[in-house]
Structures are given as C-alpha cells and as structure tokens.
Length: 90
Image (cartoon, rainbow, N blue to C red; front, top):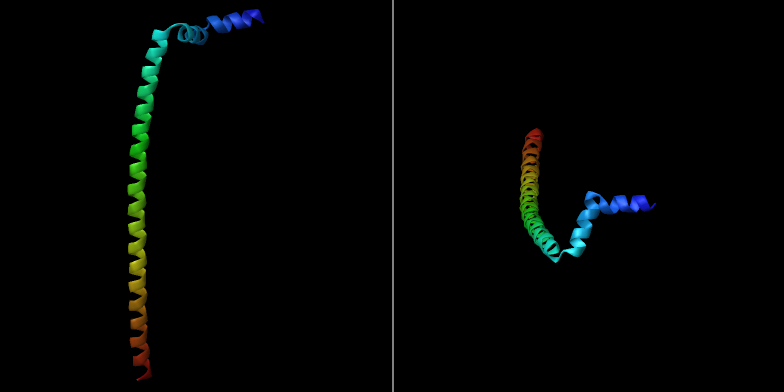
C-alpha cells in the first residue's frame, strides 16, 4: 500500500500536483493558462449562441413563408374549384 502511494506521488501527475501545491509561481502560471482557456471557451460559446439565434430566425422566416404560400395556394385552389364548378352547372 505504501508503495502505491509513493508511486502515485512520484508519478507524473503526483509530481505535478506537488509542484502546484508547493510553488506559488507554478500556481500563478496554471491560473493564467486556465483563465485564457476560460476566455476562449466563453468566446466560442458566445459565437455558437449567436449562430444558433441566426439559424432559429432563419427557420422561423422559412416556416412563415411556407405557411403564407400554403394559404395563398389554398385560396387559389378554392377559386379554381368554384370556377370549374360553375362551368359544370352551365
């Protein structure tokens, strides 16, 4: 058991953890890297959010256009049917 603990402590991740815990300079460096990673992630997230909003707006516009076209098409078909029905009775 002691060997496992020693192995973990002296392995690459164990040594990194010890350096981070002991060295304020290392913690500061890791903090800077972490902040840049968070900034980049936030920038990407905002870009994705904007893109999704644009896609949603476009999809809403397409649906509205299709509904309008179907409504106009239905009106045209009904007028066409009335015209043909009137000619059939003549």
